[in-house]
Length: 111
Image (cartoon, rainbow, N blue to C red; front, top):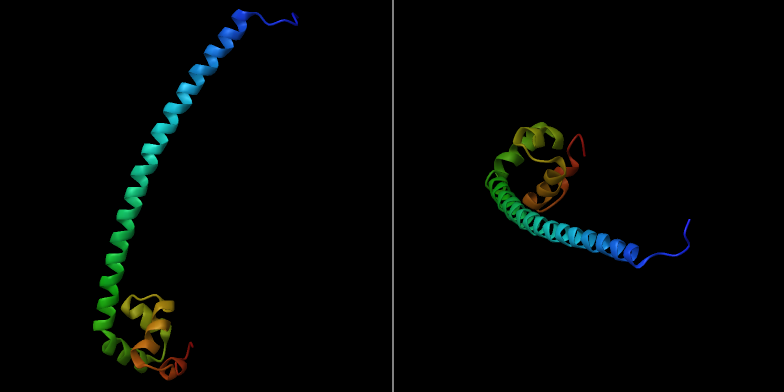
C-alpha cells in the first residue's frame, strides 16, 4: 500500500465530490420546490377547513333551539351529539353558550 496519494487520485476524488455536490444541490432545489407546493396546498386546505368550520358553526347556531330542545328531552350530551353530527366536546362547549349558563349541561345524565 502506497502511503502517498498521487495528484491524479486527488483530482479524481475532487471530481467525484464535485459531481456529488452538484447532484445534492439539484436535489435540494427539487425538495424546496416540492416543499413550496406542499405549503401552498396546506394553506389552501387550512382555508377550506376554516370555511367549512364557519359553515358548520353557523348551521349549529341556526339549529341551537332545536338542538337544545332535543338535549333537554333526552338529557344526554352523547345522544344529542350523535343525533346532530356534532363532536361531544364541541356540544359540551356550545350548550352553556346557547343557554348562558351551565345548569342544563349539569342536568345531563352523561355530564
